[in-house]
Length: 65
Image 1 (cartoon, rainbow, N blue to C red):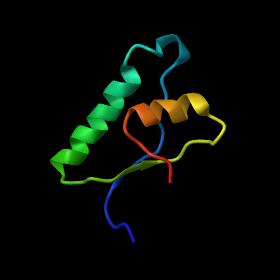
Image 2: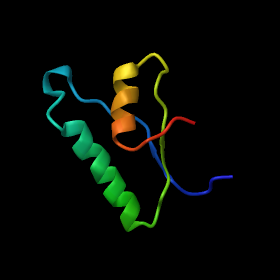
Image 3: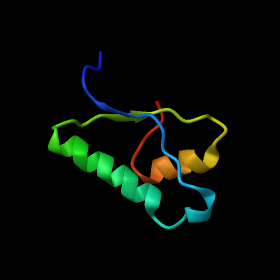
Image 4: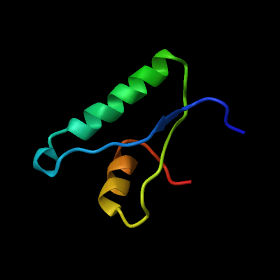
């Protein structure tokens, strides 16, 4: 059973501002905050048909479970 971790509830970047590194900056900030608190688990949910988001999260180091 997982007792501690960060859960990313919602992450969205307006379509006019995508592909500018904003999503990556947001994920990196979450990773930095987790590291400061000695938390090594980050989780999120994404719809299985949202391939754009799935590929983005893979590039950020997330894996599918």
